[in-house]
Image (cartoon, rainbow, N blue to C red; front, top):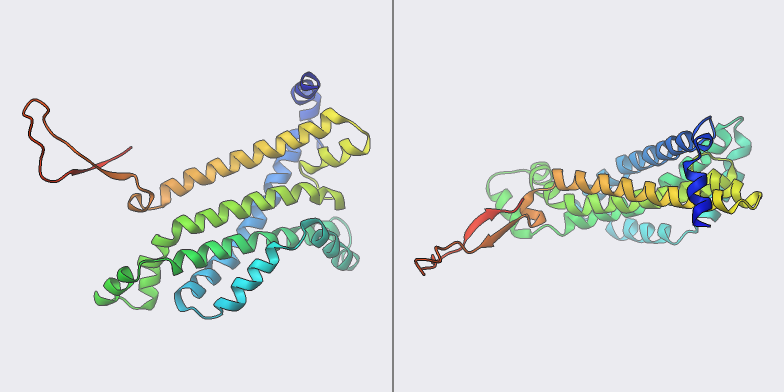
Length: 250
């Protein structure tokens, strides 16, 4: 079976054409990135506002938790049945599927932004206010940088959710890598089905790796622990300095 899957993945004919692996990969990535971008534009400002002011905390947190419990496939089919007849052509499938992907990506991103700001050390806020910063300045210069690790964690979780759900969106006619799973199951082509699952997993891991690198670049090194205290001394002298030096760990 492994040899058959490998042969299917390495067959040049499966990489060409509008329904080849390359085209389906681009489709899947496009659906996912657009959905995550729209969800982030909605959820991050809302999460920052809630974390900064505390307004609407109970309502939004509970709605986000309830949204996570909604079955992805059921929500997808409901959206298609409700919105599909109102449109013609491909938009009848693209719009409902895209809307569901956005809805599913919002809760983890919203929770990450809200929890990140709420978890900022109160002493840091007080120090910023003592320096004369206003509310928006505290949010921009103190709370947002400190909240970036959790914000990025929420984006990564939301992206994984979207990539997985975009796979089952092929059930309602959406393209992407999910076509290999649905079409393979329809004709009992096990190598095609298994190859589609492998491609989705590789795409998810690759995107998460890229986001992890972005997180490492934009998050302050003081928050990531890339600075640590190490003892520096001359072993020949046998004298240890009274205080450890602060060195950067690459």
